[in-house]
Image (cartoon, rainbow, N blue to C red; front, side):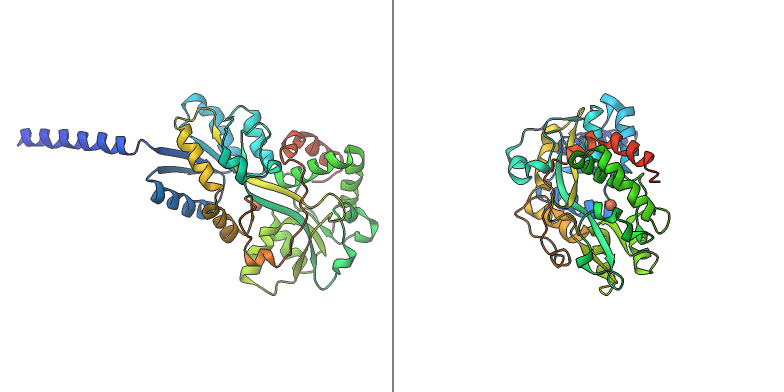
Length: 334
Ligand code: FE
């Protein structure tokens, strides 16, 4: 009997090494995206290619800290996260490597990717003005800076300045208007606040619906998610800065980690995420805008009409993040 047992365990070892060999194409992904959104896309990729994907989901700060702590021993091949500010920070901290890919150059417009090719936007999120349908007419609205005007006093809601989305928006404004003008605007916003800033965009939208305030600034997919469940939700969307440089857009995106063990597999996966099948997951599951211009937005999103996005490279959001944070601090934006 011991002899047979020995043979069996030998067989197991052999099987194990064969299956390890068969799974040599394993890609490990560190992701800050909602697992419900990303998992179906990754499962589909595995099914189509036979590549095994190991997925670790955590918030963006925790993932960066982990990459830093693991250094060269990290199992991560791909980093997927939201906001150009975070992608920029990962590149800045030396966590990513440049990737030359004709597929990505073709599928992702230049302003949605890192000029040094260390990360690529995969979905677009627009941060724009929302308003109470009963209290405000669209014709009263125009731009982010207009919300600093005295006529909005006691009518504005904002999300906390701690959120990278707002840091990126302010960074874009600094690039266009300079620090002095931007600070003046942010001070005006703070003066106009109806209540203390909200921890998230969804509570802000609900505050407008409840009449606590009448205008605010949010990422559009948060309104989309509510509209899926409540088509009569009394808050509408307004495309900001259309007669100027366009509505602020940001990305969720991905890059290959500096210490990737399977950079070729990582590249193939990121390329797949830029193609039509994967792009439609971002569009239909999360109501974001496709980064690949060949893909059409979801019907709820289409109802908002087309808009002129700000074409400033989203990497500016990262470069000016610290300046934006300091500016909001000085202006008393909590
Ligand atoms: Fe979000």
